[in-house]
Amino acid sequence: MNKLLTIALVLLAFGCKTPEARRPVSATSGSFIDASVERNKKLNAKEKALIENLMKQEEQDYIASESGFWYYYNNKIENDSLITPAFGDIVNYNYNVKGINGNTIYSTEEIKTRTYAMDKEELFTGLREGLKLMKSGETATFLFPSQKAYGYYGDENKIGSNVPLICEVTINSITQNQTP
Image (cartoon, rainbow, N blue to C red):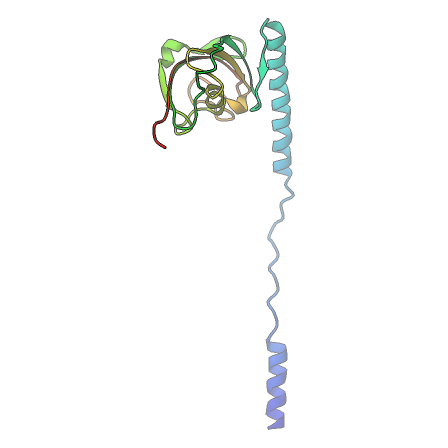
């Protein structure tokens, strides 16, 4: 019986090894991510320099937005009783799209009048954020770096990869969302 107990203890001691952790087949160093970050920093610096150069050439008082684009009002309405659009409000607007060189990519006639449910539909980031700054009847010109416009993919039509844009936007009307 003693011999049997000894054998059981030996088997128990050596048979209950904890499994060894598997080692990864390959380890990544993060060099792709690091290279991508550097590439984006250089692209952003280049676009910012282009936009700043354009702003120096024009005689406008550009406003730097908190969101990373610049704009000025072609027509500003100083009426405090007018509202800017909020979530769910319906915005009726017109706009055009130009390259940073001033060449028209999409004219107002091509795009036609648009209606947008604020923050409930797809719209490129810069334009969505720009509409929030405007009141009904105002016209503003926006300078969007590519990351605020169509970014890496472009619009898969006339706007290529990483293209900064100029958009002139007019808000025709804002209809407040009536749902609580």
